[in-house]
Image (cartoon, rainbow over the protein chains, first blue to last red):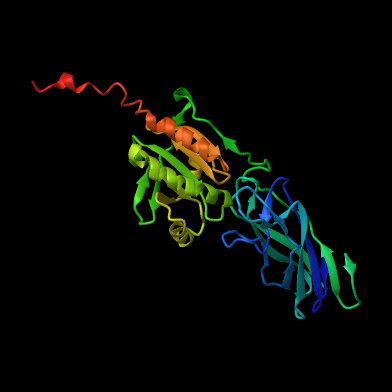
Length: 122
Length: 197
C-alpha cells in the first residue's frame, strides 16, 4: 500500500465473522458488554478515526433487550494521516482488533488479534 | 486502490480478517445440555486450587461429600447473567441438603470487575478467580457459561455448555442430593450394633 508523506489514507479492513456468531458493536447497548475496538500504534501513519458500520439491533434469548451487534461480513474503515516528515520507504502500521463473540446461548472469551498494514511512504 | 485527488488521498483495502471465534478451531461451539450420567459413566472432577474474594485458597476437595454446581462464567457473558439468579435460588434452597454452588470467574480483569458484579447481583455463593490452567483441567471451557454438576463422590455427573434450562439443572441437583455418597453407602452401620449395653 502506498502513501504520500503529508497526505491521507483510508484503509478498509474487511472482517469475516463465523456464521451463527455476533460480536458486540463499538457501541454496545449494555454496559457489561465488551465493545469491538480497532486501535493503531503511532507510526508513520497516524490513525485519525476508525469508522464502524451501522450496527444491527438483535434480540437474543439471553437478553431482555435487543443488543447492538455486528454479524456476518463487514468492513472497518480507518482514516490515517501520513506525517509530513514520515521517512520514505517501506514500513508497517500495527493495529489491534479486540472483539468478543457470542452465539445465541453462549459466549467466547474476548480476543485481541494483531493487524498488520504494510505501507510504502513516497 | 483509488486515488481521489492529485495530492495524496488514497482509499485502499487490506486483506480480510477472519474472526475464528473458537479457541482452537473454527468449529462452532454447540450447546450441550447433558442429563445426569449413570455412576459408571462419571469421571472424577479435577482438583483445583483457586482464591476467593478474601484471598483464601479454596480447593474442590474442601467440598468433599457435597453436591457441587461448578459454574465457569464471566461478567461480560450475557447468558451467564440469566443463570446466576437460578444458582442463587439453588444455593438457598438446597444448601441444607449438602449442596453448594461455586462460581469460577474467567474475567481477565479479576476482582476489580467481579466484586461489584457480585454485589449488584447479591450472589450468595462462593466466587473464585479462575485461571486458564483450571479451565484446561475441565476440558478448556471454550464457551461460557459452562457448568458442571459434581456428585458427593467428586465425580462429574452432568455438564452443561451454554445457557441451559433451569429445570435441567434443578432435576440434576435433586437427583444428586437425594443420594448419599457411594463411598459412605454401606459404611453406615445401624447404631444398635454398637449399643452401649
